[in-house]
Length: 178
Image (cartoon, rainbow, N blue to C red; front, side, top):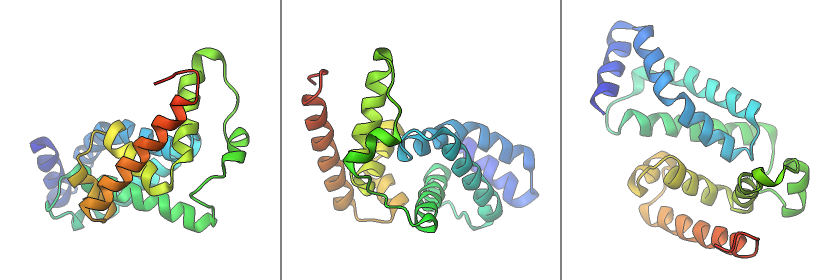
């Protein structure tokens, strides 16, 4: 994205806060959505993690070297921010299926698909969930995901395949009959 490159250049060379604000405006919703799905629907935590991500991006923007797109660089920061949070809280990134009822409140019928999708995501291993979210929700290519997560392309494809299979099985066993 040429506009991202221009804005990043203005931030790095001129310390242009307005240019950085435009980057935040462009990526704030997608980053929050990414965290919302990673955290199992915790909106407040998602906002906090997104804010941490943008603070880290501001503080480290001088290290951006255009080897990848700004988006890939930002999602790498977001990915690291989430896993730093998990490690710092000594939480398991793998939630037990039996705890899902405690994590997600029961919703009305019209919210069931969204809640079921969030629950289904929590059934995936952390790496599978991250790959599925980046690929389907954030429209990132497998190559970009490999860069964000610093894992081989084949591993991304394996996580994506396993994640799709698990989600398909979950929804086949629900009333949605996908």
